[in-house]
Length: 510
Image (tube, rainbow, N blue to C red; front, side, top):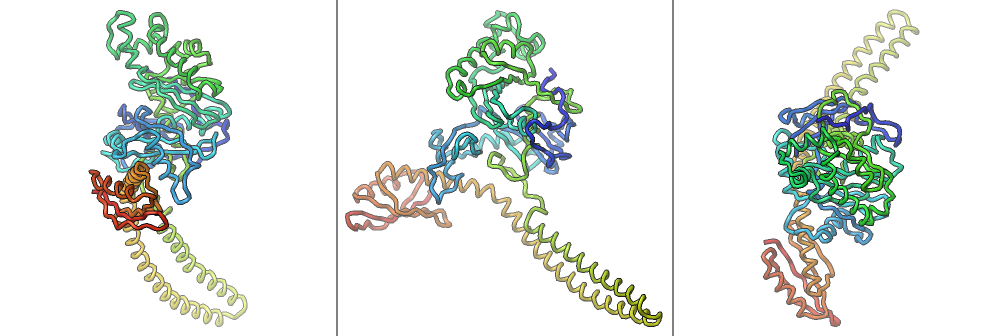
């Protein structure tokens, strides 16, 4: 089953005016962990790649997480306090807005919306799910450069100039086990909505019920790919398209988006007649996923998601993006670290220190030859030799000093490498702190107690200064925390001043 998504790509066009020159010549490995498919892209050449050949030596490794595994919300960050990080605020707000379990760890990806100031698109996924999905890939490499939320992959079509960003486009994806609608406005992600059960697997299950003909799932996919949407297959697909039509009619995010065109893609490639039938049912022009892309070696069966991963990664800059869900980032290149820059600077200084005296001495010798007789010239050259010997000794001393500095630098670099390796665990610890603070805030709100100050020491002990108009409320709060399964509390005496009761308590995780 060939995918018409790979038609004639010759590199980024000038539609969007953006360039991917920073990635030119760089091999990008895209991995669909759900289908165990990997490809190596380099410029406009693509080759299949075996899982066993993937390693940390590959310069860039990209994969994605499915939309059905993501939790998505749109958040207003204008209410964040000055002493609060944006990431911390969005994480706490997302937990509340999505009613997520505070005891469960989630990874977060977020980015600012272009249509509303201080609004952010926030995606979360269970850390356990990410680890499970990526385990086959991590068997051969400890680094994954990009783990992209599936709805954001389509950004690459605009970044690489494949699609004009001056429009509102909709993408309908129908996969084996998931289906969704995603909208891009002016080249920026706008909205995503799951299509629930209406997957290819669902259509395969419905075929016998509608036609009375038993058929294996693989045979159904082959028939749908070969015959397209015609005859009895229209009835099989109609339920899906009518549901999509209802989604467009009933959701304000879609009905008011002024969508100019819809692109339809599937896990089995282009299905003849599907776009035409969708245009009639939805009332908006629909097209197949055929974007005039051409890769040398691209006649093979490549799922379009692998191509989207390549286009997305090619358009990314070298900075670590908050839209990246990967917890397995590789350390920065040596020459981009502070230590590497120092070594380069010292190398330049050393070379300059060795070359410049020699140049000056040669020039002085030439001047002497022009001015003096042969005898004086020989004497002058002898003096130069003596000077060079002296400088050689001094240079050797400088070289030995630099060697000592390099030894100290290597020790410092080793320390920084250990710090980098520990960054992931610290990231997890930070999110646990956020979860603990959220619980405490909930306790305070439930008991009607205010806080004057909250601090966390190096042992993760949280000190909270409580204020209340009623000492009973403070006492009830302390007893409530003591009776919890998760936290322990140590309380000082309750004091009163001008009718306000105050107490400082220390809270720890059991």
